[in-house]
Image (cartoon, rainbow, N blue to C red; front, side, top):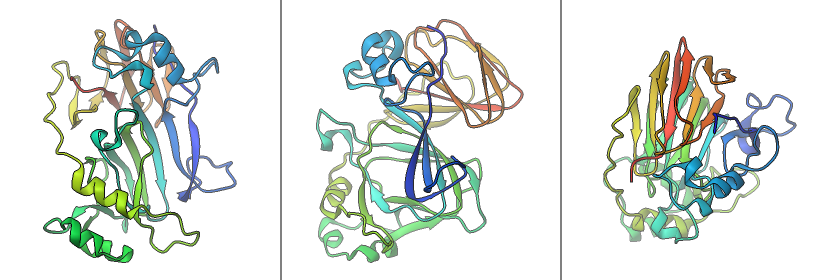
Length: 293
């Protein structure tokens, strides 16, 4: 099976803008480049449907149960306002029928005033202290910093976090939309908070196992976790997935892969059984795949 593309999907968010879809009439916060519900370019089926139909010949031997569908979500985020202060659970906490949510951010653009909230400012609070917090008081206990352009940040399940205005972010995550909001900045509209579930996710999500790096890296390893790996690769390369995992290529500059010319920001899928593939670029590109089990 050759490399192929899927149709991206614009997703409205209250904190979004218009750069991901200039024709939209409401703020677009996310553009899902690769997701199980996205249609193949020819419109014949969804990526989840393809995953279930072809199984590990497409997903690879490192993949979880193909019946669960495509395991990752790749998206761009246009942050024009603060996202809620939030947390995600791990796989064990949500049970066998669902996925937890680990995620990694690449900061493509960072405005001078942009900030990120990530983790505790000092010692973590215990369950009783968390239960006594008023929503607006979460901010006082969390670490805020300005990320560097081109840097990465990994968010394990159970880590409290939020992205701030002035960021353009590329995100790799487990394919899950389970988000527990802890504070939403007193935003008009009163989106639901999930304090009890969020505290459970903070207190009960387990430390992740140490993941082993794949032996066939092509570039700089940026993210290594039990769910996926991310590399930054420069220039031209030929290689084979060798049946281990599907791969996602995202262009940071123009990239030619097989019959596809990817413009900056676009993504392409390489099946695990693709055989030898060639990626050509005068710049950099990202290589995303599952981590070894």
